[in-house]
Amino acid sequence: MDENAFLFAKNLHKTYRKNAISTPVLRGVDMEIAEGEFLSIVGASGSGKSTLMHLLGSLDKPDSGEIYFRNRRIDNLSADKRDYLRNQEFGFIFQFYHLLPELTALQNVMIPLMIRNSVFSWMTGGTSSKQRAIALMERVGLGHRLHHLPSELSGGEMQRTAIARALIGNPSLIFADEPTGNLDEETGKEIVDLLRELNERDKVTIIMVTHNLEIARGTHRIMKLVAGHVEIPLDEQPFGVLPEVFPVVRPKIFNELPDEPKYQAGSL
Ligand code: ADP
Ligand code: MG
Image (tube, rainbow, N blue to C red; front, side, top):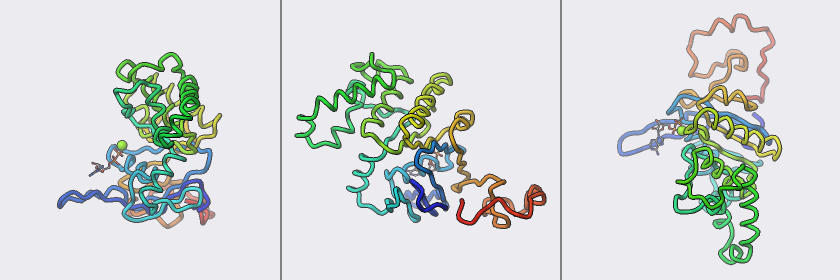
């Protein structure tokens, strides 16, 4: 593992507990992402994808394990510092957009700046904030929908608004949790094209959860969660050190592996 990776997580565990019931969700997840990478996370429903995104995005804390961002440990920060980190560095996009229904599209885009700035600087710097929000709405193709309420927008337009909102704080890392999950195929592809453009042109690092393998194949790398572990592709598995989720019987492919394993100490 590259401990200097942009973001990396080591041995993350998370169990939800409610009354006497405990649901173990993450059982030792290791992952990393390089700056500028566009990573997809896939896995069955309930496999812990959203839980992992919440931990990586500092919206929730792991029970154990460590998360580092730009070489700084972030999983044990105080709530205030985590809020600050999210506001300065991260952008979030969700399946159901999470727009405030009583605000216009433009006002929704400006919300993170209202949170970031004091009321005073908000009032004095309001014009430039608004100009920036308008520019971003134009960037996502919605310059003609500034004053529409979310209820007056299509699904694709609501997601574009949410993307503009995620961009307003100039994030270095965007977390997108099933951003196309509620859209038809064509609109979903347009949204992913927009994310890919942000990644390529603006160098925003992106972690995207998706159910759609075709969409995932359009990103740099796919990581699969299975039963709370990262499934390691067979050709990257360390020789003789099988993760416990794999069957005890060794798959036949191991008999055909060359003497020199592909695995190198230090890589995942
Ligand atoms: P995914 O996004 O891969 O579908 P999630 O991370 O949302 O999976 O959920 C993983 C498991 O954890 C599911 O079984 C879900 O029911 C459970 N879970 C998620 N959030 C909570 C919570 N706040 N309290 C209790 N259980 C939860
Ligand atoms: Mg989910």
